[in-house]
Image 1 (cartoon, one colour):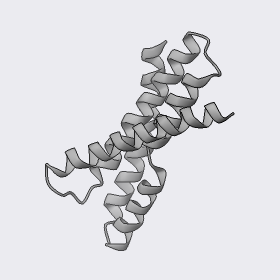
Image 2 (image 1 turned 90 degrees about the horizontal axis):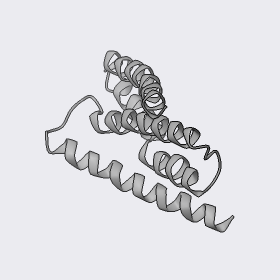
Image 3 (image 1 turned 45 degrees about the vertical axis):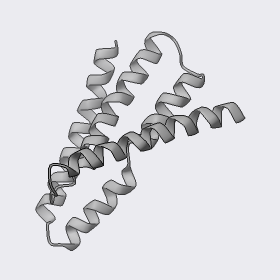
Image 4 (image 1 turned 90 degrees about the vertical axis):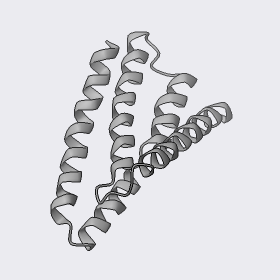
Length: 123
């Protein structure tokens, strides 16, 4: 049980640091009203979770440390629903309802497509 927590913690730390690196990289290209860094991290995370789950299923690894590290830890730390939510609240409060709606729709639709693509590629 402790080992599982450690694998999840290590994966989560790695995912969180990589997400922050995306924030830094995107900020080099200026500021945007659209929450580009979170959007990129979440869509890429959707693709990666599909890819990881697809490969794990392909090689019959349905349980174990690798799954905890990659899926729960890394993807959990890399993607962020809470930041997505607060960014939408900020967009709505600054009278950018159309941009908030676009962000929500693109995130959901492209996120589902990205998971599907990851699963498809893995299989």
